[in-house]
Length: 119
Length: 110
Image (tube, each protein chain N blue to C red):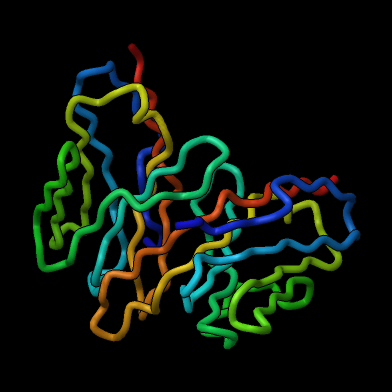
């Protein structure tokens, strides 16, 4: 089974430029997540999709970050304009479901990430 | 506190046991997870424990849960150099949102 694919793996840009990341989840996974992992910290959820709808984007800085999952499969995350503090690894993950109100196990499968450096 | 807390670094010798500790925040968390991250790679789910359990064993891994103290630990028996990685504790709040700790770097020396 193919894993979660992400591209590019590395990106270096100057502040105020724009950048986009792409993610292709595991086939059949309805739920897709974007996380930001700053060096020395754990991943922080930016946005969660269920099919092509947004479930949670409460921690997404909407003045500069946007994400879409138009056909309910792959997704793009965009930053415009980038700031120095956006330097991080952006991780995409997918799972079969949302876990549900009774809290069924929701195993998330992670891609290798995109390392963004903003100069 | 509001953060999932973990010690930042642990160094052990090959063949010893490793114990990584975590304090989580939400007593209503349903599942608690341990993820492993190797250099340049994404996170991989190692194991998880349901909140009504106090122990789970899976081959070399033993998870202990103390709900009263909101304390979670991961024990790795017979630690190998391939176990060197960063280990993240995570809890779920709500339907599926995961909150991660900052990670514990485990260094295993021969």
